[in-house]
Length: 90
Image 1 (tube, rainbow, N blue to C red):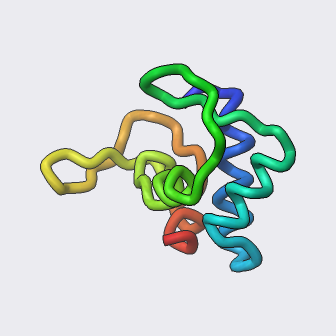
Image 2 (cartoon, rainbow, N blue to C red; image 1 turned 45 degrees about the vertical axis):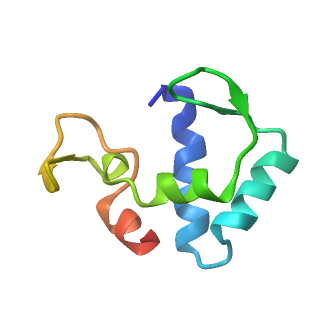
């Protein structure tokens, strides 16, 4: 994850965990504010959609884990959000 994405990822988790936003309302808000979503594989700028937000929220990578063959392991990377916040979102 590029470091300039970190504040956006943290915002998504915090807003979603507050129960005041859904994946749909978060996508609409980010689009309304003109915050770009860069597709990680193509580099293309895309609109935020519900599925993109959901993919971030459920991805254990953001909490410092990696998944290999269905098992979750401690990653060697810095977590973007606390595990407590990540677990509140799923």
